[in-house]
Image (cartoon, rainbow, N blue to C red; front, side, top):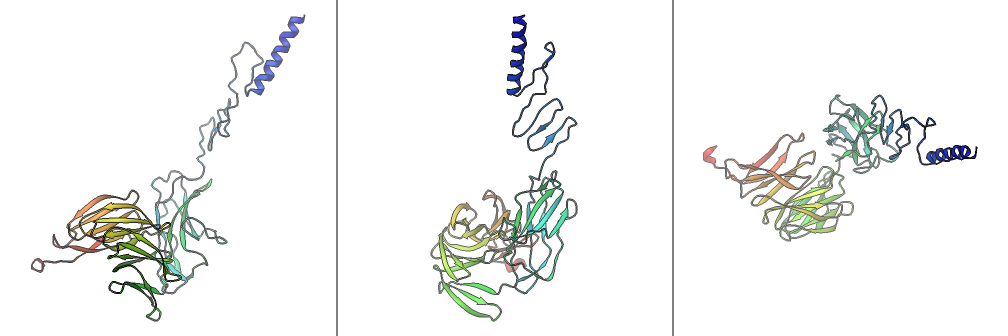
Length: 364
């Protein structure tokens, strides 16, 4: 009888060890092992029911739960139409996600910067369902701009929640009352209070200032200095230069991306565009373009920079995601050889208008 007892005890011990090892030994010794073992790969359980949970759930019936969206809107745009400071008017618009398979709606928020919802006022302003257009409800005239709000943010969402990151656009208050003027001969920038049309400050900069661009939040002015091959960064709250950035030879023009993260500088003599990271005020890329880069403008979605090249009579198109010229458009002047001088892009981003510095009047 002792051998029988040992066999029974051995089976009990084996069953216990099997349980500790994460599998179950069938009491019917002659049967095949069950597939009800536990497999946890990041919180997932696989058993006879066929359930696997690794962020989403796939059951025996084939149901998949994808969680919150992973696809964001491409961009958001807003132009203030209210002439008074501290107030806004107009409709924010957005470019939908290229893949909306996990998106059911787009949500609009106030932002305290380009990525963060406004503290103390982080409720949804408006919602647009997928397929319901690309425009949020317009802000009526005299809509008060909440204290601390500098951006509008758009997040994708579905029944499981909201994507952790979104897209943003800086709110450029039309009522901001100052203009910054580059004075090439005196090497200064004049600050004009537009409510009184008087100069309230004069800021010394580099040699031969030519172009000025203001960041979307209004905090800084970037000034190109043609003679010293630099860009002066002016803190508009103090009207003092806080950084001087070396760029290419003969910087003429500067444009800042809609979210204010980069400044693009056209360098006439080096036939290039310098890309300045505004968070560090350092050049992070230099893009070769045509002969005599004279002006630069950025599309409202921030995806492309258009650069006019006066001597080669072309317009270079820079993809800002890779800082590479992806297209060169001939005949920037009218007629050919017309020396394109400046470029401006329509608010919807559909057209770029290029001026010509030389026109053959005989062909008019």
